[in-house]
Length: 221
Length: 242
Image 1 (cartoon, each protein chain N blue to C red):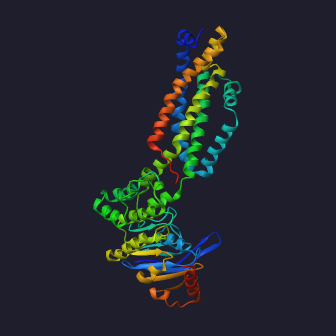
Image 2 (image 1 turned 45 degrees about the horizontal axis):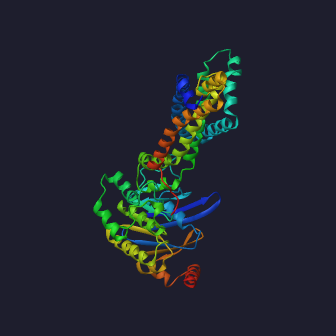
Image 3 (image 1 turned 90 degrees about the horizontal axis):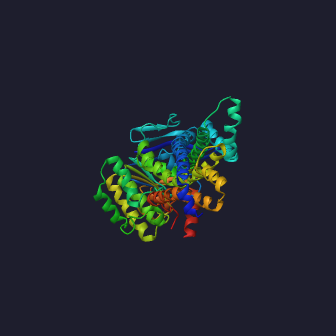
């Protein structure tokens, strides 16, 4: 059985798995980007309380493996609170949390490290605060943050694989299930790689386009 | 008149400015000289209302800004009627040099004032590089752009911190000649520089600063006949170095 045979025979199952993976991403990406940016802005504006909280949470979530957090929220937390939650929601919540604090810390740091001289130049040129933000701060921050944000989202896509371990029927779990019935690991995991390539390539192209369109090499020539 | 009255400034417990008073009249060129680290740039930043002095006040025409400032910062700051060009230039890296010059004027006056820009491009010899980004231009080119950006805003007072430090002799001559012409437009210029020749020939007022105080002040003749030992010493060091 070739990779193509695997893809043809099991395409319905694979596509179902891919749908679940993309559904997870549809929750994780916007939540992480919107709430993360919001959190980063608030954290930069209130460094003592929100800044420390964001840094602390980002540090904790980067130190504890995502799988441990996922398992903890799936097993002990649900036992402690005596409730049963759909694993899809648990996975969405866990990965969204990781993404929100990852993006939030990235944004907080970019704002905190923003070169003040550009703002001073705007002030002495008589620009209003809103013009300084819209014409100077946001464009420079966007260009600074863009590559990191895109990488973070691709990492989050890859992290959705962990959801399979709490029984979310995403594409990796589907591949495992097919493999357990026909045992063709080479073909099946190659096919799985093809699916990830198909999803990640457009994202990487989009990231490269954004980078080319909005960022440039700022090093001194 | 731009005036600083008994300004004091300190970083933590280290005093930088001690009771400094200066007056800059419209149409006059005031040159500030002094050894490195004596507080020249801090004085300029205080005059530009970018640093809050510990004591004293800055008066820009009728508006008085006394220390300490209100909690939310000064109200109705006088920028860009009073503007500054810094040694580090602070050009915005995401905009071309042309956009750096035009963006503030477009936001403030809603017009790009192409004629004025063309005149500045010609005066400062910027045709060859005006479409580049700051990091693609030499320091000397950036210095000219930073000055052009400030001039496009038609300020009444222009504070300049060592803006000719990276220029060649020809460009220095051009820019200094242009600054001289600004007198006719009633722009008050405050210039920190080591170009004593320019100060001798052009300055209406020369201030010599050392250790956070104005040690000597007067017309350009104080550079020929210094009245204090400290200025004599400074001038002889510069003469020996050049």
